Image 1 (spheres, one colour):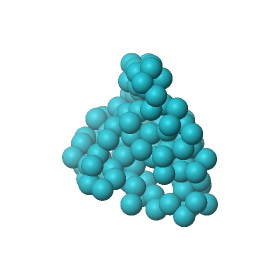
Image 2 (cartoon, rainbow, N blue to C red):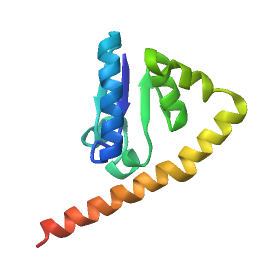
Image 3 (cartoon, one colour):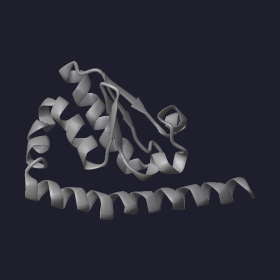
Image 4 (tube, one colour):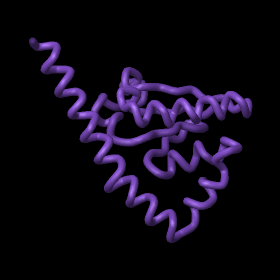
Length: 123
């Protein structure tokens, strides 16, 4: 069983994970999807869980690009991307792109959504 933890409050992340879920269902791949409410089950708080994508398989938790690669390798329509991003130069570039650009940008948007929600609820 492959299990993922993602920021389900992020519209971009949610759409992407929904696409993975559809592909997994069509391929008969067992996939369990957790959102931020399950962060404590992963040993994390909500902010830590929102910072990066995580996959658990065979008791091992992987995060970031390697988590995506682990998931992609299990999904027929995505295996090519797992192989491509495993190539040394491409892995290095994609990992840094995710870790230093995409993940921080998505987390900043998450924090902004959280602040707006807190402001609305305090009114």
